[in-house]
Image (cartoon, rainbow, N blue to C red; front, side, top):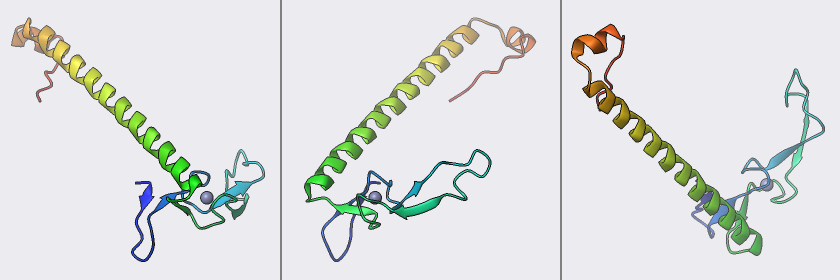
Length: 113
Ligand SMILES: [Zn+2]
């Protein structure tokens, strides 16, 4: 989750710039070694803190971003579930027209859920 609740202070939000890592890579990614040899510096947005207080304008902006991203991911997940439900429905409908011998002869298997 993107909201970090701290016991001793107000809520903070995961830094959008470094995704809550507190650091960012500098220089180019090596095609063979990846990020292994790259230098890292403290994130210039959160200054290595990893989070931003939600009450600040920057925290509010990041909250809006993470909320929108989560909303879109949820929408996409629901669309995928609906497509899968439709696929299974059509598959079951088509298989219902065949006898068990025909299903076996075609090498098909009914997905029961
Ligand atoms: Zn950061």
